[in-house]
Image 1 (cartoon, one colour):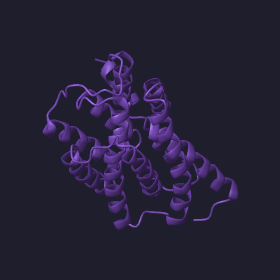
Image 2 (tube, one colour):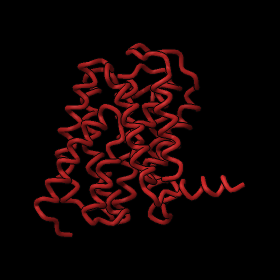
Image 3 (tube, helix red, strand yellow):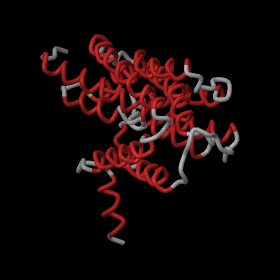
Image 4 (spheres, one colour):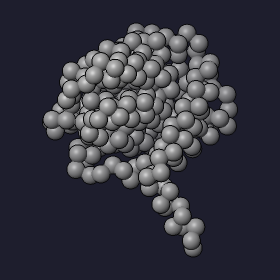
Length: 263
């Protein structure tokens, strides 16, 4: 495919902003995927190219958090396996199944996540007692991994929510370990997309460079302010992504609700 300089600049700028948001609160894919599709790229190729640039950007943020000592690979080794396998299955399935039905579920999940961060007790960098054991957390993360491979946007926010609500992590540690898990889901999804020949390599690498810079800025902000301001951003991003999805008149949710209201 051929793109104008204006389109390339637009996509690279979007990748930078998305990387910064991703490192802080997740949800950057809700910026890059619509941008890719607006440039005329078919949906599955948009998902695949987004996986390439997001994988590289997430890896850079993961290294930053790892060097700062916020990532516990041993603690989340089993959930990481679940995340990888779930994403691999999701990315394989999306190449054969229309992912449109997920858009009816995602807004509801985002609203629930926003209310959790809005109404939950104040969060700090101090860990709390986990509400689920390792297998329960692994099951939740595997489900998010499948979603990430199948569709993707908002997966980082979902992972952070699982780690805060069920694993008992403080917000900064939850964000840091989300990068570890999200890296695995991205790599698994990318592997499946590469096998399907869906990746636009040159565009993906170009966007990846900007995404790396954005992730570095976001990771620095997260560690610099110790979680302050991140929680409101999670709420704002969750609601913003919900509004963006619900603004689409073709969202299946608008077909489900009227149907039930008739009874």
